[in-house]
Image: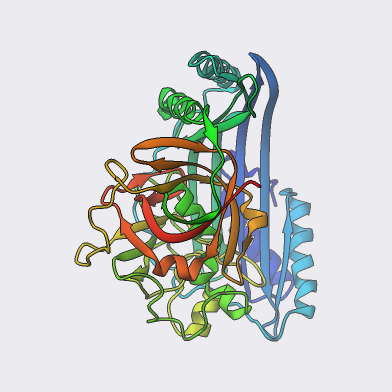
Length: 459
């Protein structure tokens, strides 16, 4: 057998032949293998000087085998040499003797289905020197955009080429390569006698040349300048408008609602009988649109070889679908949705949320919008500390946020505050979904208005 180098466009036909021979030698009838690799370049700067330059090549494969008792054994390795793959395969064979009798994954029934066609554009790497040059200029331009901005302490510019493949003993072979670039700029503002403030912006694209650096600088600058004159906010109940980014963060934090794996594990807000339940207002719909044109670096298949799909999760406020792996789909008696990983107990995760306003339903306040709202409300731009402030299995959250109090058209930066509530109540208290959908780096959503949310100001 030959040595395999994944980022040199691994010869998958040769790998399949080698694994088949190992399976014959070990008397294995059923196996599959999934792998990924990436070439990553990234830079960070500090006051015009290089702070960190990184280049990495990462490779990994996961091998699963089923023994004569249909028990699963699994191993992972980053050693893609002949001997490394041999050791991993034999390790999986040995592990199958201790397989879980209560959970037996199988091949996805859709692993042979045709993959969807997407506009997958590959971009050439610009190299680490060019990345450093671009980021140095972006940092300088952002600092010089306003006297209030003192530094850009958190920044980064990166590009990556990522490969993924899946092969199984039932003659399935899938492979795909994508490219991606990203930039983030988080500026710090300081004024005499005032607390430092920070704000930033993020952008992603298929390549560095496609990144709109100027708009990222402008967004970060505009946000930080809007926080110069801040004031405390009184604790109470407020009408709240979530920015698209903030609302998508909140939905993502409670994605166990739609996660079939979480339901089976007993850590979801939903149950096995949840389909058909009204969980939001009738003018709210939510999809997981992995194949959306704006979903940069999207793969067309999941870790189990299942083709990706666009899945409607909530329609007119009703929960209509869940996200599934091969195993959870069998447990629920449905087809896999293309959201599974390769594992002994496949995890399930969302791809790209898209929030829609259901046109045929009337919002509680159709005249409510960000541009000309005369009511007093809180605009939440960014939610913080999601890892600590969300109790996903209970549905509750208490999160610090960056935002403004809008009163009679005046926009006042909020010094420090937290927003708290229950996701189930929040979804039922939405009073307006604006018409304009906004594309973000994490999904698509309009501005979302929720009534009667608890805001706690800094004591």
